[in-house]
Length: 463
Image 1 (cartoon, rainbow, N blue to C red):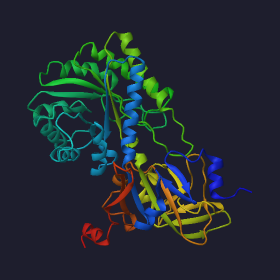
Image 2: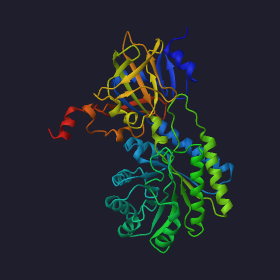
Image 3: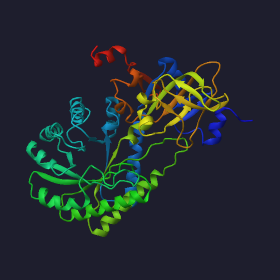
Image 4: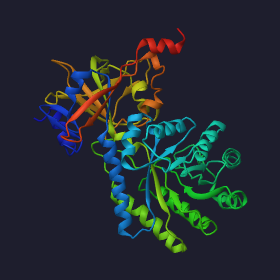
């Protein structure tokens, strides 16, 4: 009878997969033996595997360039990384090795741009797409970039009053964009995004406020779908509406030459994940070309803003099982040595599901379990995966059990308040970076941050 954990995984999924394999009943992540990492650093532990960031960027570039070549697309492709997904310096520096551009969303983002420039990581020719609601400090910081010679800084007009604020702060010619207030999916409590300008107002707004202004040149129309790029009637309908606005605007604004399709590719959240990146990319490029050709206008340069897709799959979070509690006949709880609410807040906040695998003991029998965090909060648990509303892990006994949540690299630190006060004062875990030598391709690790200390929390709290 096949009742071992390794049997369960191999019978349920195509396994091994690109980033996962098993050697001597222990899990490897991108050919890195995780038990070796745990023995060196302990748990709980955050991991960032830098080479995955580069491979994701190169993958997207390849997809779009191939799709454009197939239909003889005349515009260019420009990859932007959304800094809000992960602001860490090691993420930005790795991503920027790949000749990409950046997207910002608030005033302090601009200080990161300045730090990257001062460190020689970027030059003033990089595209900086400035999204988000523009409060005075954000406007001032954007203006400092434009006035300082960052010629491809593009503030995206999010509401009609922003143009006047930018006009007062900027001293030189400036490229700008307009964000479309797209309609949201029916599952939302509202129909229209709070971000951007309504479809029906955009052309008239351009005529009234931008066309006669000698300082600003409208270069980009920004289209963003909150739920990302998906093969649904909703997505294709919104893209078509956006393209119709672009064509109408292009006919009266010759300088308009770029379309930012916003939203992002999804990332792998299950070993059963299935998404046809090639088909979706080719369909997007073909639709843009066809609609523009029918309208008799040139195809736009395409910008994408990939945040989670860039950095999400580079991340992993490792825990120890520190106790087992049998609460009744049906509920066997495994307690982890941290908290889901503080370490992986999307689990609690938006019911996010990640790839969950045992790190060791793949030769043991498995059982259904619930995972509980350390906080005294009933919401601090994990009880199902994206392919199933159940969790199965090896039975405990005869040594420690370690588990890993994978593709956790986007948003978790910023949403969880990294370096601040955590729920029940559960400390932020150690964070290590894994990279590979360019010569022999051997992996190496380095400690980015120690586990958060009680002293740092006491200082924040005023003690």
